[in-house]
Length: 97
Image (spheres, rainbow, N blue to C red):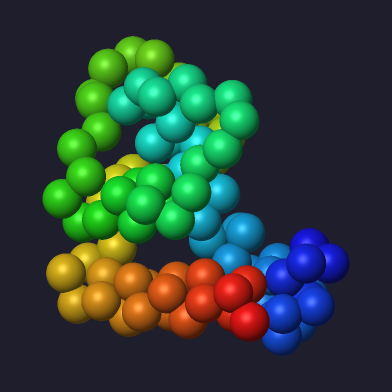
């Protein structure tokens, strides 16, 4: 969190971003399945919230969604996605400054 705060995001914004994007990333990582244990990057985030991202609808995925209280996908609409994309780019570019 400190790194994000150092680059201009306030703590409440970081908390809100995590609350919004951790659930789709968890589902993307374990239901698709990637099973990535080291790093999920910007591409993964944008893929996880993309309106056309296909998640399996099997018993394991349903248990994961229910156990972690993850809402049913899709996590964005076609109208929301461009705004999320450009906001993600803005935040990513903060780290390069």
